[in-house]
Length: 178
Image (cartoon, rainbow, N blue to C red):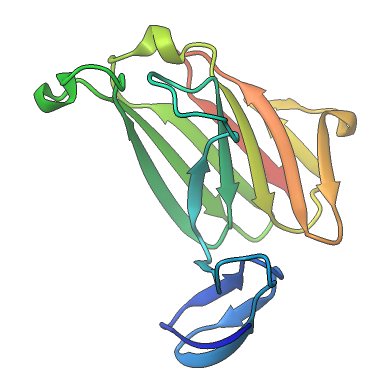
């Protein structure tokens, strides 16, 4: 199906094709027949996702998938509660901040737990990062250069995939050297 969509000013990515589009105009979009419609993502977005599940569970997820579309400096704060109680009404939430900073020669990405709530539940969380960028020369995690076999790059999609675990006591800094 085809749709005309007005995209506000800024840079956008067609989710289905990966095409980069300058906003501030109406664009024609063709989406696959097995999809619900056009989907555009603003450059700079950080989108947390979950693994596919047969049912919704309560509590925290062991794996968090981050879809990252670098442009300039952007951030996203993820708020989570225990999924069971009403403690969120009293401010008992886990707050995780994600900061992406694209510069000329590198992309820096920071994951930081911003409070003490639910540290035990989050201490072994695995992050699966899907960053849409050019192929990196190096991937550095907390100052340690990662072997190329530990990350994947898809040239066709311009997609870097890298997984890492963190614990609740440490912020994680990832540098992607262009």
